[in-house]
Image (cartoon, rainbow over all chains, first blue to last red; front, side, top):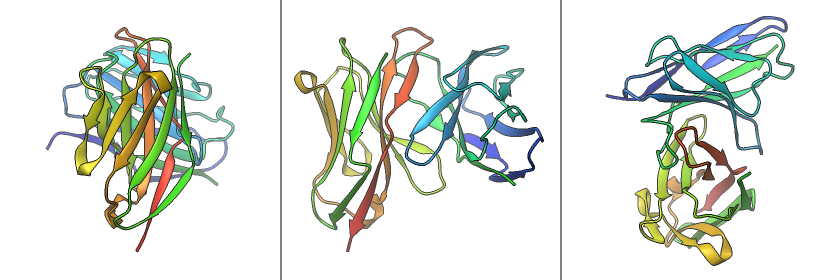
Length: 114
Length: 115
């Protein structure tokens, strides 16, 4: 079945550590996205990529980094510079970055900083 | 910049009653609009989208939404609520019209269904 997978489902991090969240899609989509979800705030865009080897900052990119070396993979690293990283992280993809293309979402990773 | 306002962070209805979730957007030109649903601890799933083909859009699970340009609204409705409809619902609008367009999400409305 085609879809988006995210791993791990739950992740615990000590303060000062970097962690990497995995996102893989087998939909052959060009565009991929990372969102952060906090209670009562909806989804906020962290980074997005329209094509392999290219990505752009979203609205809250500080403290995060990404890479897009393969079409199907878009990992997100939460660095120690992110002051409040505890949140639910969602990865999404769309066939392209066009305005009317729906985004397909993975099941999410819940990150907790201890 | 585009913005989306969802009125009511929590809506509670009885099973079998009408569901109405409100969404208003800010745009001076016809936008692309979406409704997504999120079940607990899961990702978002598309319910329906408006792309100017028709003002009344039918989606999955019996939901529909009507685009009203004069009111800048895109409210989501379902004639008869089911217990399985309990979830969080997000309205979203596209910002920009190029290949670099982004989706702006509302803050969400949690729908509860009373037996």
